[in-house]
Image 1 (cartoon, one colour):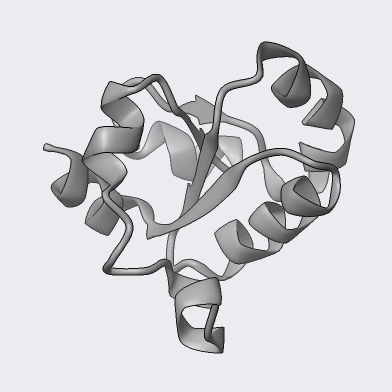
Image 2: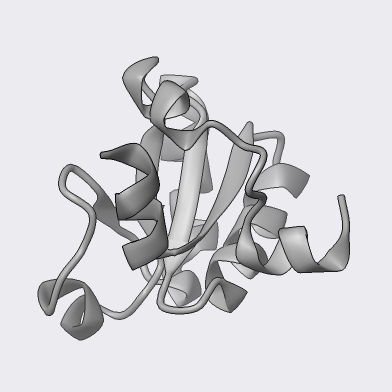
Length: 102
């Protein structure tokens, strides 16, 4: 995976199909950012809390799509989750991800 797609998500990933198949969207922005708008059905786990939630994300066995404002924090969260054995995709910016899954 190239550095650009790692940071900002890949245009080749079919995020709509992933969501249709049960993938969980995890928005890693702050609660205040999340409250100002987010992808419908997403859950908010701020980047600084992602390590504490790894076990619960592993437990349900669903793939995870991370998102944030620009894609940088979601790439960091995706790396943490991937290293923990979670199947994860970097969805990049939440507004772009929302358009891709509609």
